[in-house]
Length: 117
Image 1: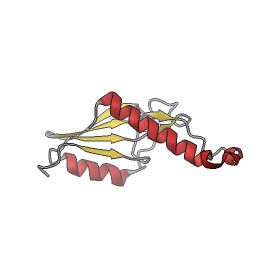
Image 2: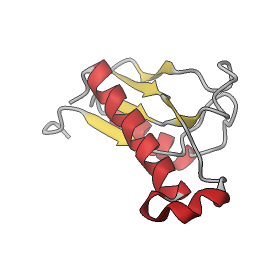
Image 3: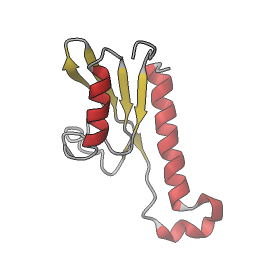
């Protein structure tokens, strides 16, 4: 693993205090890489309606997995309109596509803001 400078994982499903059993496979994978000394970051965007409870979905936290490894976890907020089926008449801007674009923008904002490369 010495050739890896940094691991960035983008996931819509990662454990948080409000959902501790969600995305545990992803967390365990990232932890195993971090234990080898590779710097790791996770960006797990949270829909605004779910992220209102800051204690359940902290915007940022550090998961220390060993003396040599830690994971920076970022949970930016995004607008989810995927349940708004009455917008499907918009064609290529259907609710699912709009939600994905908002998710993607949240990821890009975090990468820029945190200088993750």
